[in-house]
Length: 96
Image 1 (spheres, rainbow, N blue to C red):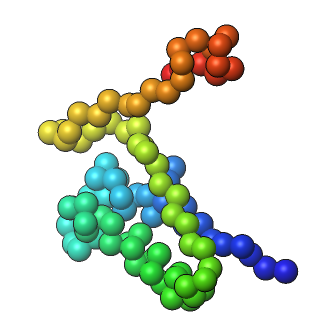
Image 2 (cartoon, one colour; image 1 turned 30 degrees about the horizontal axis):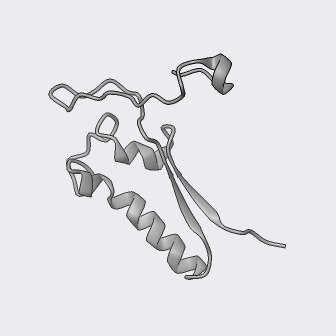
Protein backbone atom coordinates (compact mmCIF):
# COMPACT_ATOMS: atom_id res chain seq x y z
CA UNK A 1 0.00 0.00 0.00
CA UNK A 2 1.22 3.50 -0.73
CA UNK A 3 0.69 6.52 -2.89
CA UNK A 4 0.92 6.88 -6.67
CA UNK A 5 2.04 10.52 -6.57
CA UNK A 6 1.81 13.78 -4.70
CA UNK A 7 0.09 17.02 -5.68
CA UNK A 8 1.13 20.44 -4.43
CA UNK A 9 -2.02 22.54 -4.16
CA UNK A 10 -0.94 25.97 -5.41
CA UNK A 11 -4.47 27.16 -6.27
CA UNK A 12 -7.70 28.43 -4.76
CA UNK A 13 -6.12 30.80 -2.25
CA UNK A 14 -4.14 28.17 -0.35
CA UNK A 15 -0.74 29.12 1.08
CA UNK A 16 1.42 28.41 -1.95
CA UNK A 17 -1.01 30.25 -4.26
CA UNK A 18 -0.89 33.28 -1.97
CA UNK A 19 2.77 33.68 -2.88
CA UNK A 20 2.01 33.55 -6.62
CA UNK A 21 -0.42 36.42 -6.93
CA UNK A 22 0.61 40.04 -6.33
CA UNK A 23 -2.90 40.58 -4.94
CA UNK A 24 -1.98 38.71 -1.75
CA UNK A 25 1.81 38.69 -1.94
CA UNK A 26 2.89 42.17 -0.88
CA UNK A 27 6.29 41.01 0.33
CA UNK A 28 9.35 43.15 -0.33
CA UNK A 29 11.94 40.40 0.20
CA UNK A 30 13.15 37.69 -2.19
CA UNK A 31 9.67 36.04 -2.11
CA UNK A 32 7.75 39.06 -3.42
CA UNK A 33 7.69 41.52 -6.27
CA UNK A 34 8.64 39.99 -9.62
CA UNK A 35 7.06 36.80 -10.95
CA UNK A 36 10.41 35.06 -10.57
CA UNK A 37 10.51 36.00 -6.88
CA UNK A 38 6.86 35.03 -6.32
CA UNK A 39 7.63 31.63 -7.88
CA UNK A 40 10.49 31.07 -5.41
CA UNK A 41 8.42 29.30 -2.71
CA UNK A 42 6.55 26.96 -5.11
CA UNK A 43 9.89 26.04 -6.73
CA UNK A 44 11.50 25.39 -3.34
CA UNK A 45 8.56 23.24 -2.21
CA UNK A 46 8.59 21.32 -5.51
CA UNK A 47 12.35 20.71 -5.35
CA UNK A 48 12.23 19.64 -1.70
CA UNK A 49 9.48 17.11 -2.41
CA UNK A 50 11.27 15.79 -5.52
CA UNK A 51 14.45 15.36 -3.51
CA UNK A 52 12.57 13.43 -0.85
CA UNK A 53 10.50 11.13 -3.11
CA UNK A 54 13.01 10.57 -5.92
CA UNK A 55 12.96 10.94 -9.69
CA UNK A 56 10.55 8.07 -10.34
CA UNK A 57 7.67 9.44 -8.24
CA UNK A 58 5.15 11.84 -9.86
CA UNK A 59 4.99 15.31 -8.32
CA UNK A 60 2.21 17.53 -9.66
CA UNK A 61 1.61 21.23 -9.14
CA UNK A 62 -2.00 22.40 -9.26
CA UNK A 63 -2.34 26.02 -10.42
CA UNK A 64 -5.24 28.36 -11.12
CA UNK A 65 -5.68 29.84 -14.57
CA UNK A 66 -6.85 32.93 -12.70
CA UNK A 67 -7.71 33.84 -9.14
CA UNK A 68 -10.54 36.10 -10.39
CA UNK A 69 -9.37 38.78 -7.96
CA UNK A 70 -9.53 42.49 -8.64
CA UNK A 71 -6.52 43.59 -10.65
CA UNK A 72 -3.96 45.70 -8.83
CA UNK A 73 -3.99 49.40 -9.60
CA UNK A 74 -1.97 49.89 -12.76
CA UNK A 75 -1.83 46.13 -13.38
CA UNK A 76 -2.58 44.50 -16.72
CA UNK A 77 -6.19 44.12 -17.79
CA UNK A 78 -7.57 40.60 -17.63
CA UNK A 79 -10.17 39.11 -19.95
CA UNK A 80 -11.41 35.70 -18.79
CA UNK A 81 -11.49 32.88 -21.33
CA UNK A 82 -14.86 31.51 -22.27
CA UNK A 83 -15.55 27.96 -23.39
CA UNK A 84 -18.45 26.03 -24.83
CA UNK A 85 -20.45 26.23 -28.01
CA UNK A 86 -22.84 28.90 -26.77
CA UNK A 87 -25.89 26.63 -26.71
CA UNK A 88 -26.56 24.44 -23.69
CA UNK A 89 -29.09 22.37 -25.63
CA UNK A 90 -26.44 21.34 -28.18
CA UNK A 91 -23.44 20.69 -25.97
CA UNK A 92 -24.80 19.59 -22.62
CA UNK A 93 -23.18 22.57 -20.93
CA UNK A 94 -23.63 26.29 -21.09
CA UNK A 95 -21.01 28.81 -22.08
CA UNK A 96 -19.97 31.03 -19.22
